[in-house]
Image 1 (spheres, rainbow, N blue to C red):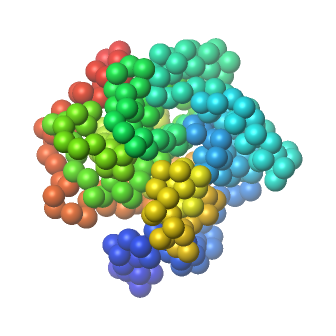
Image 2 (cartoon, rainbow, N blue to C red):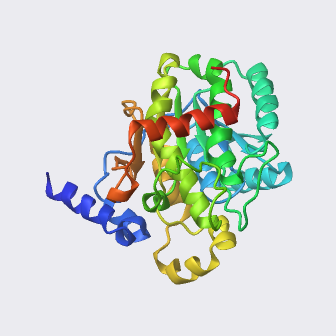
Length: 320
């Protein structure tokens, strides 16, 4: 292991330094020749969910700056248009289109995918960034816990329905925005919907992100026949409107350490544009693959993983 790799590993395992703006700055010095080339995404179309603010808006801007047509996919069309105007103020030549879809509503996901397939024969990139952190246990329109639906069921279903358009791309890629908080949570194979025990929003969020990361290798296998590369990643600690709303106490304590939205978006943009295509099925942070476990208590066996997969596949109404 090189000295730089050893330093990177120490940053990762000590959490606060590695997840902070200082960890990003330290690693950034190791990437002088690693940035995607200007115009790397010219001619490509990218869909970004949750693109109205924070990390999602920064991802949309980063992809547009590299030449992509970006479908800024949001629940609230007016907020999406406001975000589009913000990005255009920085990048007047950006090709941005606001799309409306609530990924927590599986019927809406199906309608949206049908419409998108009719309008876009080819889709190159899908970045699943939309997120929620409900204070109380809440169910989406389909009767599933809201964090699970938003972070797992909706993204899986949407990708599945968009496979014909993704398969038309020479290099389709899907990125799932996870969270470093998932390291603290085991796979909830006996209670995927968080029906037992005291419900805590932050725990529900982290549990759903654990499921995301656990399923990433399975999704990579499932979608390999369509040529799709699948990656999960976490952005570190970022100062975003979502954090301010959901965890104001954490934000007050850590604000000097928090990354900008652009720093948090960096790996998603990099995974979308870097060459050669990254290996599929891995978990990333700051442009490097990371372990999916640091605690013995979070490990699971194949039987537990497949119980979670079966629950999610049935809940999302997958055709096969």
